[in-house]
Length: 144
Ligand SMILES: [Zn+2]
Ligand SMILES: [Zn+2]
Image (tube, rainbow, N blue to C red; front, side):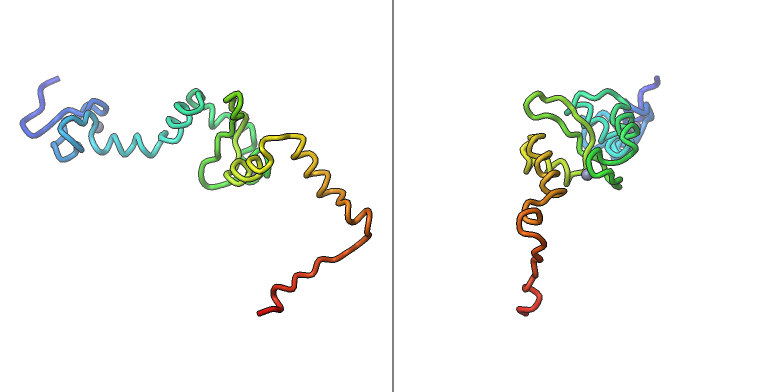
């Protein structure tokens, strides 16, 4: 490779000789075009691999196996899913929407028993069984 002309530098990624202005600093090894590409495409995967130990393509593989939706609410989303993991063991469990990961599981403190109980509670509310139908009336709208 011929040395770049003065004021030019070789990007270590695309191997092109590019003007200094395409480099963020005198020590930057990659040109701005390469950096932009790196940040957008695959940046999420890189982070996921680094943080959760997933291998290349495993996020997509998992998401495809989940049908492209959150493992709990079964809804799709435009952005990325959270990689949910067991905080005790550190083991990755699956992909969840932020609401299910950061609200539902967080409030339930990752306690499956509590979540089962909550599901049973909603399906068979004790008040209905014990008192019969009592209707909650929301008066808030009338107090304007
Ligand atoms: Zn480059
Ligand atoms: Zn969800």
